[in-house]
Image (cartoon, rainbow, N blue to C red; front, side):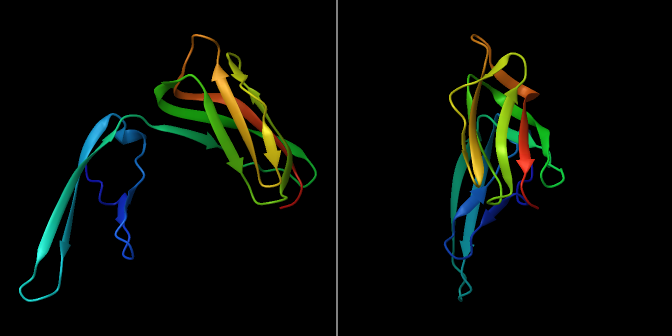
Length: 150
């Protein structure tokens, strides 16, 4: 698998960053970085490291489209290769654009803890029914909000 288009090396500090996606969960990859100077003779050094991607977890939200002053909701979709017993997440948005954020879990899923809201985000926690796990691709909740301004 060619990962060159997904990995980046910072020109300022040399930091290697890579955001793996669902397609690489459960795999191991060898990253080799080769540094070469422009002197004569040319010198180089190579450093290799293995990176194991055990699991992938992501939440997906549709765009919330509603006229100012009205409420609307969007599905919250989970993508997970791991069996999760709980999930804690934050939804961020531009300050002062939304209010009255609430999360309605789907059947078999419950709110875990008290949601917290601010003028630029909301934090939620959900959990499956006792003895169950959240895994695979599934809608887990409905996120509702009132639009204050565009």
